[in-house]
Image (cartoon, rainbow, N blue to C red; front, side):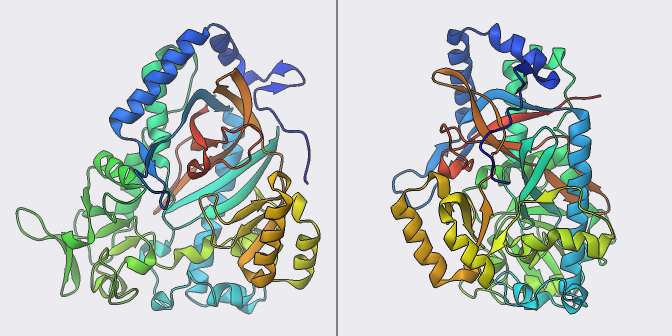
Length: 472
């Protein structure tokens, strides 16, 4: 599995692959001066719009401009059709798993997944056991992180079932590319992504609670402007045409949730929440939370409001639970997985732990609940001292770690100071789950801008690209 050569998505056997042919002409016709001018223009647009992200704990101003690479990543219609089928299959299975573990628990009783991975999981919420959310949907926005290793080889790195971020970059990347290079969109038939906000709003409205007997009122709940993803929260609320609210804007009265407005209280039916479970309701979870709404969970469990995604959905995107998603697909859907997992060792298993400790320099090791590129070891890129320090952490708490082979992530051409060079990429499509399951053709491509790096997260120096799906 761990290979040394990387698949270049633009070039194969010295020739330009068909989806990139017109881009080759485009790059050859662009002198360095024009490229630098366009890159500066893109950065100015990002800065003017306010597309920044926050890195906490580093002191000073935490807001940074996310690096944007102008060279788009391209998929054919056939490639995307295959990915779309696999992503939808995975989203169905993950939601079936959540409905099961908060209901009858059949997959655990059948011995197909260890009960301890579910019931001892920090993301498992006992407060919603036995409760079925509207339409039986727990995770309404599923972000599936994918990597490519060959012409027809794709792997799922992880699942994000709570509040996957980054969709604003997907939309703004496209907007900026269309503004700077309109000729590219005249010459290439590229599937649009601008329907995402409309699809998201339709998805949220489709899961309105039983007690909603009119056009549902949807709001987006944010922790506030100090949150790293606040730009995205306000951006999506604006495009959906819904109110952006904080916990203090909402209150419970009787069986319903209300929003304070200048015209008096207005009932709220669906919350697209962008805060963690622990902060949703201080009467149910963390009592010191100032971000949530006291009594919200009582209204939720009585069918007065829908929370998207459902509290407790995080148990499905745990990195140890991830290893069982192919089994979920077989168990719930009676199908074979269309997208493969990366082979994974669970350090909580004695045999797996022995293998991992013996091969640390070759592996990628991740914390089970880690995110953002933190809490991980990339063995081939680490020093002996870093490897030994990580070894001690694994030995101290094996259950907290999983390990995977170091995949040769595919590369795409990327504009760098020296010109154009290959850089490693991944992809996060956003699958919407409501009355129907749908996704726009594309997603967020993240790129590791440092030569040789496999870490694409923006907090670790990664950037973003526009992602094209060519129409048939």
